[in-house]
Image (tube, rainbow, N blue to C red; front, side, top):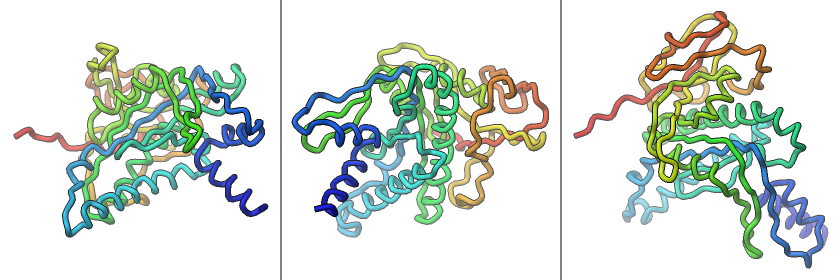
Length: 306
């Protein structure tokens, strides 16, 4: 009985976030009231592989598409494994929708004061996770001789989280913030991380580099000013890498990516201040600190229309 109880508890903690699972374990089993929680500042990320649909095909040679799904499962499982790192413990995987991976940060209930202080570190953690997802996918491309490309959208704002369903309950989040984050993905560019103006305002204080994309037409929101997150600065020396490096799909794996992750967001007073102007590259961004190395995601080559 104890073993069965532990197995059931393990399954519950795999289905639901730890604090939500604990809520149901501590509550009266007869009390099936709706569980919900409102949050004022949550970072939401959608990461999709838009060219997976072109890869998926049902043939006798691939067991009617099963082998394609097996590779997709490997990709998602590697993203899950990345989230198991201690540095990413605050990020919560919400769900996968086809080949789209949805995650959020800031969903652990905290007091209002603590939440306001931690939004910078929370969003910084989510940005680092998004950057490292490119690394994970590149390694899979190298091993499987494929050319999958990631497209990411990030937004921040208020959400409502809750558990829906008595059988196969699912934890999910709702709100305008979630809708806009999804639009940041769907209107984005392959190989890029598109973020809203609010995300850029917060992360620029944490030594991240951006390029202003300009105004993008977003369904239900009209014209929105968006930015591409290009990388993170490192204060070891003054060398600067170009924003326009051609993205190579196969030659490097996880060990060869030079982006430094895992450093917590510094206090606002100690970071460099960057001026981002539409269309400017890394060499034209001004910084108050000169001894910094800027690490960027390799950019994708332009796709010529036929």
